[in-house]
Structures are given as C-alpha cells and as structure tokens.
Image (cartoon, rainbow, N blue to C red; front, side, top):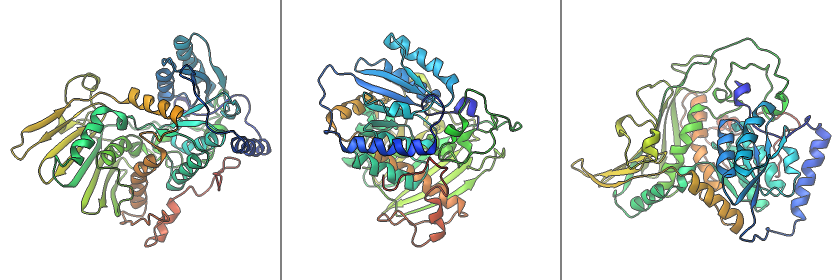
Length: 455
C-alpha cells in the first residue's frame, strides 16, 4: 500500500482498546448533545484547527491554513509518526510555535478547544473520521473523494445534519470565481440547451513495484492506519490508491474534481437516471483491483453525461502551473482534466486547476473567454466563513456525496460486468439489479472501527 509514504490519519500513543474506544465515542456524542449551541465568534477569535493525516495533501493543507491570520493549527495527527516532524516544521515556520503531535487522532477529538478537523486521510478513513469529528462537535474539511462507498457518504450527511456541523469537501474549484461565472453563463442560456457533457481525466501512472511482505516500521501504527478496512500483511510496494479496500481507485481520486465541477455548472443535478461503465485493468497489470481505464455514461433526463479516463496516456497533460496562475488557456485538445459542454447553440471548454473557460460558436470561433485562477484560497475562505456563520459551504457534504456517487456507480457497473444500473434515489439501492446492492457498502468493518448506525 506504499504505507510508508502514503499513510494518513490519526493521533498519538498506543491505540485505545475496544472498550475504551466505545466508551470514548459515546462520550463524544454525549458532549455534543449537552452543548449549549453554536459558538459565539468575535472578529478577533482564531479558529483552532487539528489535522488528521499529514501526507502530501495533508501537509499542503496544513501549510495553507497555518499561514492564515485567522487560524491556529493546534494538533497534527498521523499513524506514521515519521510524517509529523516535517508537518510540524511547516506549522512552526508559519505560527512561530509547534503544534501538539499525536499518533491517535482521538486525542485531538478530546480537545474541546479544537473547532475544526482537516481530514486528509486515504478514502477508507474519510467517513469514520468525519463522523467521529462531527460527534465531537468539530466542523470538518474532508478531502475528496468524499466517501469510500455510497452508504458511508449518506452517513456523513446524516452526521453533519444531526450534530449541526459544517462539512466542506476539498473540491476547491467549486469556489473559484471563474467556475461560478461558467455556471452563470450556462444557466443564462449562453450555450442553448445542454444535451451532452464530456468529462475527461487522462494521464499516465507508473506500475507498482512488488516487494515481499514485511513487518511494519516501528513508527507506523499499521492497525490504526488500516482502521475500518482489512489488515493484510504490510507491503510497502503496494500503493493504497490502487486497491478497492482502501480507495475508490486512482481514477476517481482525481477525476471527482472534474465530475464535481461539471455537476456544479449544470446546476448540481443529484441522481442520474442511469449509469453504465466499461473499462478495466488494460495496461497496468501490477496486482491492482481498480481500473486503469474507465469510460462511463450517465443520463440526466435528456442530457447525456460521459466520462472518459485512463492512466496510460502520456500525451495528455494536467494544466501547467504557469497556466493555472496566469492569463492563459491550456491546449484544450491535450488537456487531461477538461470538460466539454455541448449546447444546441454553442460549445464550452472548461478547465480545472484555474484553467478558465472558452465558448465557441457555430463557426468554431471563440466568442467568450474567461481566464481562471486556482480555487484553494476561496475554498478555504468559504469554509472558515461558514464555520463562523453556520451557513452551508460551497462544497457541502451533500454535494460531495452526489459527485462521488458517479464514481461509485461507474465502479459498481464495471464490477458487475458493465451492467446498466438504475439507482432508486429514495433508498439509494438498485431494485432492478439487487446483486449490485452488495457494493453499496463495505462488507466488513474491523472492530472497533465500525460505522455507527444511527450516527
């Protein structure tokens, strides 16, 4: 699972035993139920933040938030303690003092001073980490893809609503001004009636290098890292993102950004009428059990929503940094993360990562061009403002659920031999394809890391 370089998520010291964990979880929920209501904020109050998972993205988010004058990073937590030193240095450089460090994140949840938890763990920890944080009275910024499976996403929504928590998903382009301008343009009828949308996520990933199983490093609490998922022998050659036990797959792990952006500019349709997927492991046959090629079709009424992704296409490029932060457009033909919106009047190219958008007329001439900038700062601004005001954030947990739902539907269709699926929106089940229902949730959770029901 490449756990040595990819392990995210939790607080310090030895893991609590099952009895202590259950006792603590009940205590966290009780503390919330007895609370006096939302915190009263003054203009000068800093928002106290703890971070769960300080891998690459977790450390980047730590850096972003630590540099803000309205935030104090109080805790860093990760089951691999080797990660904590570098992340702590980032905080100390920004804030002038060290945060508290923990291997087991539950120590952070016990701290009533903590207002916000940043959950930058692998997919398999997103739901339970978020739910426990909500029960502990914390607002949450959770990385994408929001949930490992459909049922976990629904439970995250339930927890956010029950405990009155703000939960923002890390699909930051949703907060970028250029993306919201694209939404306004489409909704105003600038493209005519939109009948076809194509979403791309094409790039090149390396093969895994297999090595023999071995003992976990002393600094890694491997049991805690695995958490609710299975605990196979430790193997640093396996990359967690390639395995369905821990991940939605490397394709959804990146493509959910474009899927979410496409949903947003279309007015955030919730459930598709149908879903169908093809693909599989076509090039990177290295032991993974998630696709390296995925082509899915979703229908929303008269509109067809197509998704194309592959991990073996070296000629497709993500938007370069100088384009993301400049008044430039990508070379759309080879843009790995583009969206094509096809209307009855005009056509739009839309880029993630601050790539901006352009509209072309029937003579193939650009008639509207809007440059973009990356949305990270606006997304963080929106989240922290909602922490203070208790408003719903731009990437609210419910929108995060509907976006990653497309990934789940594509994966389930593929696992059933590319069956067409129709999801009942009232029950989030497949009445016409009952054999698909077993993929709506994890078959087993390791005690004590079970998904609470009710939350």
